[in-house]
Image: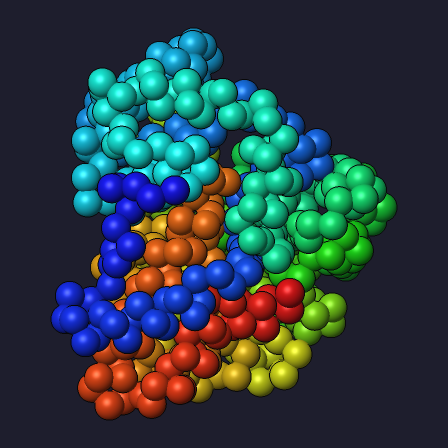
Length: 466
């Protein structure tokens, strides 16, 4: 439905001739199926296919892009439906969101929300204090209908494949449920072993015991612990997994002799770790995970450079993933050398790198991906999945890394309705960038159309083996 909130040429270049080229490029990729290879949608949505309860549960509470902006202005989590003694009335939560929607001016979040409100629910007026109730009612009226359930949205959005991110200890029950339902959507898990790799994780020892239970392997020994990972990775692969994901504070890797690795594991397992052991163990396990990826073919993803849970009180009282993950400087070249020297030339390994600091892409990651055959650059993560961030990524990294050493776009979202909006933004940005490459005679027009399709669909599908 046409909406004044969504100009048809939004994000395209201002110059008329360049805009026409960009519009043609965008038209060619606008309807391509979405590959969503990394994200955090709730597996329950795909297994049980429940109706969403209310507009606040759909747009506000699960989206840390939304909640972090509101909390930055002093709005308590409780007013957003988060916490032990939180507001229970979804209409009041929605009203709080609407009253402060002006805070999102110029942000990617507003474009995503406006897009979803317009496309999915026919909203033609911008959200605000005076429109809150009418928009709430328009959404709430639709939520019980079959076409707003998760699986129907998957089809409406044109998703070809979507990956969730799942703990190594997860029983994957919802993935089994989705498979056994007869539904044809392709939803696959991603192996995220941080809880049993990071000794600084709360309840790490208990997690190792749980890993032994779910894998059937003896995690009291180094060899048994590695076998437990192999067992769990196989279970994930049986449900269609094509990738692993590792959220480490730094990208440090290590390749210790066997006796040292055994001794290190015994110290962290038994609670006798000394200073530096946690970081060294995480480093060693990145190399072990890379070796396992060579064995079983799972694509490896590494997210580093984020100080997670910057507010200890927020993490304690409201849990993780509340928007308090803050960029910190990390360096990749020396950190990755042990892993790369061990398996980096093996053609069976694909390692996709992500970070938050933009200068790291041009200074370190682009040169690394531009030479090591196993490395690919993930799109700018979290703070940079915006018009400006995407443009800077293309301008800073492509000349050195090359387009074909990147993996297209992924939405990395917990908010289901933002998926098509995020991909649409990426396709518009890339169309504008490619149009400028044409008019400055760096690309031929036919070549740009081929690359536009790859950036929107093909590179992600290929890199993640989807």
